[in-house]
Image (tube, rainbow, N blue to C red; front, side, top):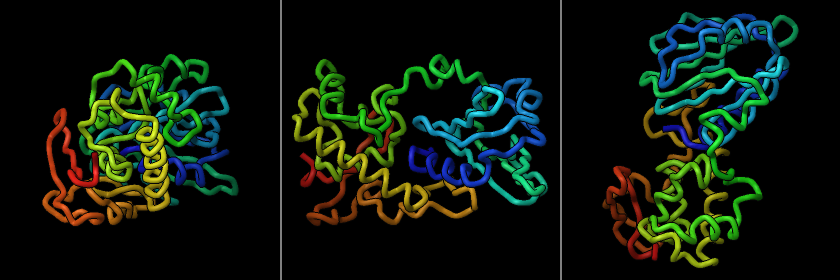
Length: 277
């Protein structure tokens, strides 16, 4: 499932093309994604001007001149394809937006999603804080609001493990299973450690590891395990930098111990029993 770095990679690619572009047409080939695409998406978006895309957690938000926001959620297997031609539609292409970017340059922005767990929505900017996918999101892990004090306040009465806390989008927005394992390994914290037992030093290390891992992955185009591709068709090369995720029964690069694997809340979890305490 695309996590924050993969979504941010898509946002960056889109921002280079669609900012200040005009929507010429919108084709909805299949509207029954995870939630049904609004019936009036094409009508409302046509002839509007797209502004610079933003990201909130795992969601891409594209403001428009007419005061709307186009929301794109990639779900489990969604991809955005940006092409400077208008090619034939392929299997699993569900939405295509044709934009004009000055000097009569046209681009095709296509949403492809084999498993259809993603979503596309259009709503008023003023409704952003009430949108059902956005209203309960926690802090962004790359901004200044992720602090030791914030985590202490959230964790003080919680009896859950830190791995599940990292995956809770109401606490921190955007982290998924791959990066949770990598972050905890870098911070030297066991995934099953209960959050209210973490000390200030642990939380500081956790925040530093979170920012470091996510920023490095963004620079490398995210992580391609199964489905993720950048909008230009390239893979995400952070997969080459993964130190524990998917490394069951291999040697820890730090201590040479065997990387362990366990299932926690139905999610694959990888860690070093020697390095992580």
